[in-house]
Length: 356
Image (cartoon, rainbow, N blue to C red):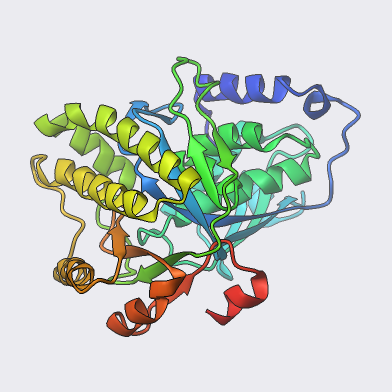
């Protein structure tokens, strides 16, 4: 257990203090808390922080959550007679494997949980399961911290609204603020130095024909994580200064395109936004290139499909994998071009989703 950052402690206290029910001493702690959160992919990207301690972004972003892919987390007070409790450690398991407290994933989770320990719950048992490859550019950290915050909300019986939970999830991973919501979500950059206005909220705009295809190039852990990548780009790329304003413009265009169900405008803006983000990485020094040769081949295949009249676009996070954007009418053609493509229809009924 480490001493948490005082600014983060103050932020958590402020968030909980906004809800009198969450702070009520009459609230009873449950035997366990559960949380599930989906992964999300950003259609307009978040890249760069104006405050690394509070995870405040340089620009806002828009995402789509992917049902069926995400994180399930169960959280319990750690039994006082356990070996971990005796040594002052949490007990953390990931995908059925008990983790050593010094492993990076376990260490990061425990550091986050330092913000929520109480006299009644000094240590936690965390059982988490990802249905996406961990740290492979598929937003597993976002769903992981969102699920953890939901489990904390359940365990401590806070009953916080989703926007407040997104503030807490943001401290673990900025993108986690968006994984609290199904469908489309907007993460507001905010202006407050205290971070109280940098939260996510749902964009209520169902789009039944909207499809996402996952092109997995490499599911190994990234050699450079997103946080380190952001730090390198903002510090060593002359092009980066133009990024925040462009990203905000792209966000506004994409929100409008979603509301109008203008797929051509959404797809073109999302693809250009992703390429612009990666351009800042490539132009930093030393260069930061998440792409692999197969990534470029997949991009070229998308461009060839568009020339053939198949309207499909791609987006990429900090990793080699592509996420394809297309409408249901193009599903057959896109799936034929990308054999084994996993297709997700975010607004489909669960039984239809399972069949994709």
